[in-house]
Length: 398
Image (tube, rainbow, N blue to C red; front, side):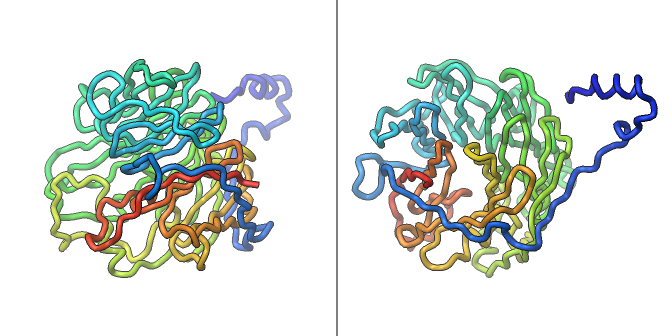
């Protein structure tokens, strides 16, 4: 809750002051002039790399990378169900957990968070839960941001983040009713005090056909992984599929601000449209006859909060796909007031064709290089495509 006590007291003591009672309108700041500071490529210095074709470490599918305050980098492997810990100098220190259902063991891990008092949390997709352990892997407990399994329906967690005492998880629960009434309740689950009490915000019902025969991509849109958590419980999320707008809410879901810029959505070719499908396909139906797929990509792919300088980094489909030679991705950077400051090309395209970037603090950029490193995964790789072993590279941003 906001501290309104002093405002209310002032209004009682000075009745002629009425501005405090006027509701404020969230500020909209949509840029159409381009970045104020122009294009500024990152100056990167490589610090270390692990994995790859010739490395001792083997990775399956990396879904998250986080950096602890001590400088160690923690890499979450969804396929091998483990957390790989790398020292600040690039030394492989240890592997945490393994595949299983026992205390501290993992199934379908999808996110990492560092909690107070030296606790590591690992989010799991289904059933949606957070498994906690010490930094050496000793199991501690299990928590359910999406809801206890005994509460009914199917709970799935997609993403989890933690900052300043606030934990936020995105997920959904499938509600099976008559074929025309079944739906998925999609939401962010927020805890501001502990790990066992949550409030749902930004909740939305998206239709689901249990038979898998019908699917409408635009109607199914939600911010599953394309949101970021900043200081003070602020959530940065592209709530609209077709507009480049980042909505800023507080931990209760109240809208505080909207910022973004004017862009033309990126059009897809037929091969790209053929790759699109529902996040949750309960029937594994392959008949796409009655599927409605949009002709253009969503406006925003990813949102990251850079705690080093309190900026918000936004990646669009254009920034991740249609780049000149030598550029892996181009990010838009906004300040805390929503001003479009600069465009930041990441000039690693000469080294890698596939890569996912993580801002991990301490002026470090970690890039996962290789086939299947893309943010949304590559489960449906072409059978003829050459598979490139995953490699993790840490850079200093100078």
